[in-house]
Picture 1 (cartoon, rainbow, N blue to C red):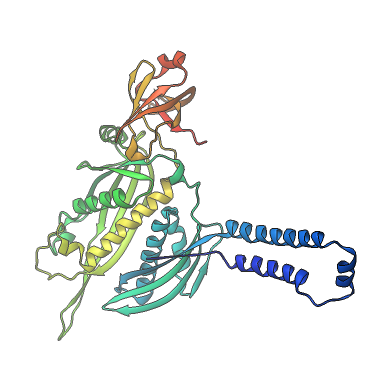
Picture 2 (picture 1 turned 135 degrees about the horizontal axis):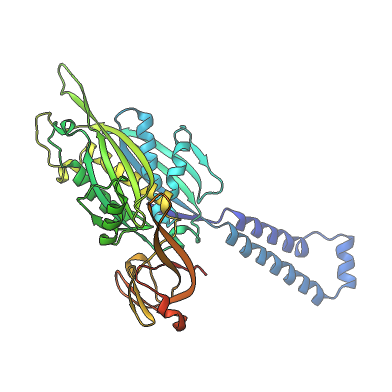
Length: 425
């Protein structure tokens, strides 16, 4: 990927203006006004005016580009052609756009908001009120069953995005079941849900800006059992938990007389995200893709093998895992990260987030007291109330941090289980 920096050509405008001013003063042909100046205005005053004009022009040159500096990123994206060229082009654009935004440091969670606009086949795309300002499709071609696009992207990374100001949130990947195991008979891919959980776990760990995965669990997560969900979250130090179910693995066979049969296989996933503090469902989303199944109908496929994940079907699953990660960024990155107090020693406390989550020495946090109660319907509820207590990070570890209470006289009211939020200055 090549990084091309430009200054929008405004620098050239300042240079031209400076040249014209100086030229008009010193090189213009004599006229009555010029003759009058030569007779009645001292030379030192004329020289001062020239210097002043040049200085103003220089300031004009150097100030304008600072406000309009942008970065162009030239990237390639590719996708396997399955259903249509149009769908493959969209996936290739998504692949290229992700590479550019991820490299630039901009908000990757905003990519999903742009995808509907890229469905229309155009040479150029322009956006307002977005870090991605301009996309130019330089080339598009098909090769080896793949759609390959080359684009240039104009990006203005924001310094105030949620992933910049917030600590990283902890995410636990729950068990992903296959709703109809008989659909997994072809290839005997009964462990696909478990292996997809591990892939999603790695996707979040390696590419997410707002989350740190704390691993996977074999427990199924359901909104019918919020108490169990909160217990699992607490045991794994997770602010959020992902649950899911694979709802479609059916295949269609395009029989050929001479050539090898072409098998296209579906992958549909229903994903749900739960709040680890309350056990309540926050949002859900359905994903559906189709890809060529390159394996024999009677073969047994190892869904942990590199051969499987390098296949056209494996590539599709990797794209789905990336889309899930991007949707998590879009939905949850701006929600407040709530580190929890896990130990209290006088005016010192320990919280369950550390260097890995973006915590730094000197950070200041606001304390919130937590409590539980039973409502009029007999349902358990959680309550948080803001306190006047602030804390400062004094010592840092990989997954924990030690904080000092700024108001020692109020230290007795701090309890294990209280939560905090980072004070953004």
